[in-house]
Length: 297
Image (tube, rainbow, N blue to C red; front, side, top):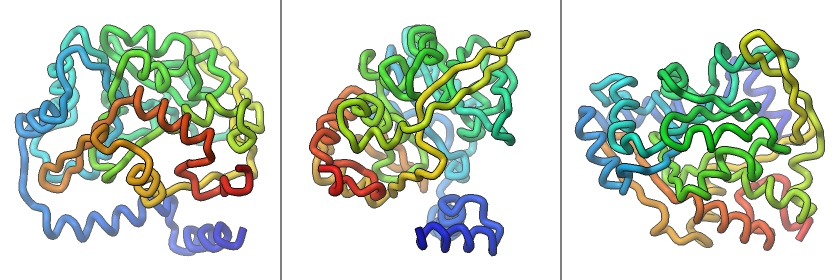
């Protein structure tokens, strides 16, 4: 693809490892000129409560620490604040997919850091946190942590019925995001791909290759085979494609949003989103810009 070749040349020429991060960094440098109001941990937690997060909730958190530049507290205060809101009967989750430098690296469940950001990496070290054994691992702490993480090793894909992402729907869980845009959805959108892969030819494209992953648990190494996209297949989507689909087909009252200084904070119900995305997927309505669903429906 000519477009991809141009992108790769641009990235190599200007030493840009992530085009998305480069664009976000430039946007952030401009936004910081306008948003300078500082806010405390108490103000942040009040906004989270205002979005309906309460005691007993199961919450998956996606975050960008780079967007917390007007926050006066610490990462630990932020995590502790979330845990205090949901209480002992709640469960907090964060993505913890591994940062592996080499293709044949072994994923050490206890020691391999996550690539999901510094907030998720800090949470991974909390006492009692359980980390699922999967290449799209999740960390969880709370009442339902064992239920959410225990079967992830047996997932045929990373996001099927045995995954923590899909199980959120069974628990009426919520997805909470910080600093990631107006209609950020996150990894949970891949649940629909996984559920429909054997039913709809379009989604089978995402799972053409079977790979082996190696995990280190204490003093032993175990392997797991799972389906993923082939090496020459790269799907594409954007913030615009997300917004276009959500604005047109979803009940936007299910997406609650607020803003504190520069920080966007969003929450949506996992059960509604997963089921709606599956229903739309059967009609060929997706957030992906490539591959083009029109060729398959």
